[in-house]
Image (cartoon, rainbow, N blue to C red; front, side):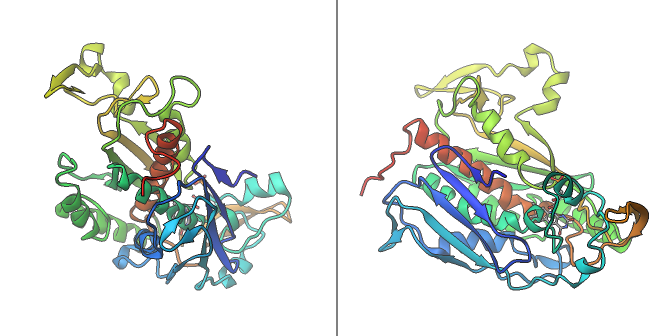
Length: 368
Ligand SMILES: Cc1cc2nc3c(=O)[nH]c(=O)nc-3n(C[C@H](O)[C@H](O)[C@H](O)COP(=O)(O)O)c2cc1C
């Protein structure tokens, strides 16, 4: 089982959902990066449950402890080990259904592959594993920030409600971030936020769930990150996003819409302003031929509706090989899109940090 992601800037995540803790080891982070637990905590707090009635009732304080890799407030080039204790795991609801396969969950495939499974809370397949990614991603985000790269994600669509998104640039990114964080669904437009929240609560009332689309933008990425063939920036980003639980699709730039365009519409025309090359449109989503072209990188992730729903579903008892019914108890988000936003940002940051180091844009020893 691969638990490590990245080439030079790598994360290894560990821990089961209802075990004593989850965590992340970050390898390959350049030395000399100012890093505190606060830098990581602020990202973890965004992933934690508790943003209003649309979130799960679980209380996961997700306090991070840095165990290694930092000396006098700076990274020293050694593994950065991050620990997050699991303090609100309630396994009782899982014991009752431990032999029943939960539709939309990973236990059938885990059992077929490994023969055994930690049935408490989904084990490694739990969304809880993404706390480790967000912790590791926070280190990448800090590293990128020092080099002028910023990433912002938001709920673009929830339950079919599409949000208006303004043009985001380095000048307004902080204001947009504030707007996104000011509503319970992490979207860019307050009116759509209300409608989205309504749709989530309606599904919850009917013991159901909804999905949506997360859009994320990376700004300040120089031209030339990535490679032309098998290690394309786009293929690494797609892998990173598709590795997030519940993601069923990825688009870059115009994405699937490009299939319906003509070449004359899809091509981004080149232009020059004050000596800088840019394109007048961005259907490429910031990546041409597998390498960044200096335009904003635009990525969308399709998130399926939460699998754990409180209504009666048909399934089988895996041990008895008998058809059965299941009602999935426990405390689940009726929509995981808002909580997955920081996870998408983290995975993008990990890829961009890795490629920035591989291309020499970020040095392995940061200037003092
Ligand atoms: C932040 C986050 C939280 C999640 N929380 C839940 C949850 O509470 N209940 C649930 O059924 N799935 C949740 N998931 C998704 C499941 O982990 C995932 O659907 C399941 O492991 C099956 O994998 P697949 O959907 O990628 O095929 C969450 C995913 C993320 C990214």
